[in-house]
Length: 436
Image 1 (cartoon, rainbow, N blue to C red):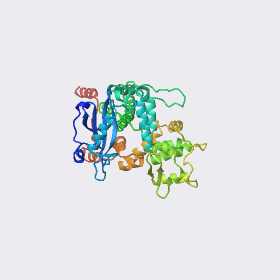
Image 2: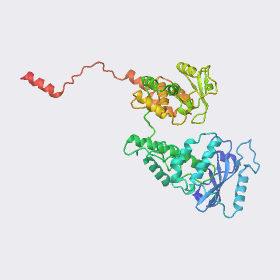
Image 3: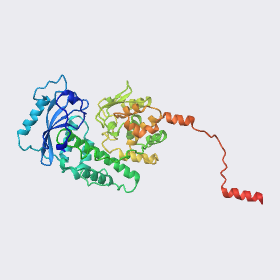
């Protein structure tokens, strides 16, 4: 509560340097129970920021005052950079300007998500996943609720209902939404739905935390620690092909689609990344393929094997650099979801059981690489992950390790021991025959 917040020492840069850094501000009361001067500093920031929090009815509004004079190279000017006294004076002046502080405009969950999407775009980060999850799962139920009135129980109830709801099927634009079967009591189906619900929750929390970081709401208690994602639901069973199965799939694929499948098996790239490749993205001298636009928004260079270099060299030979590397039979670009049907047909012809999706080819490249001893860090870099966490989670158990080597080298070995497994009844019958 505002009237019981701990009084922080904010008077000098030395005192402020001792305070914990992070999202949550440190407060001093200006008007008991009504207004507080706050100071917040991110872990990697050279200086913190002053904020004013004031009560408006049952909620709070937060106003940014300026930068703090924490660094020797930053001199207080009374406008954008403020000392403690200047920040306190500016906060009091802002309070005096209106006897009743004006609350911020009504911030709904819908508005908070829109602001967050605008922020992602300004940073050059992808927004498609956030927009789709919000439109399908967040806005219909929570969109019109004010963020300041959002309760932890509301979010938990929404998350639980989302996990029990059947998943959507892909449908064309303008067509009615269709659903898959409900998860029911199948443990794997429940795990998948809970895992999906966790991803939607992450998008919601990211948008609400952005609103909090921008000073649009005074507290993040309703969703920060009180709402937990489902636990132990990310251990997906990764389907990948053996080398023999991969060869059968290639032989069973239509010619134009076969080139796309081979490219996925040689690189581990996503379907969308391969569909955008141009001939100039293959560097024959370096033996790499440049992925200029990925799911994470970051470019990378995928290193190829000798066979991969030969394959891409054949695909690109004699073609103009601006041409698409892989096209459909009619010469058009491979678009979203157009890989589904030819992949199913090729899987059926190759007698793959269970069948595999196109994304499974990415798993195949990663799994076979890890089992062959390629370091997890190298695999993660080629796949475009920021670190090894995703690779460790999905493929770490496939990697040769000192534990496996030690057990196979030192555990007991019993050799070819012959064991009498004659059924007990048969043994008794023989004994009676001998005795008789």
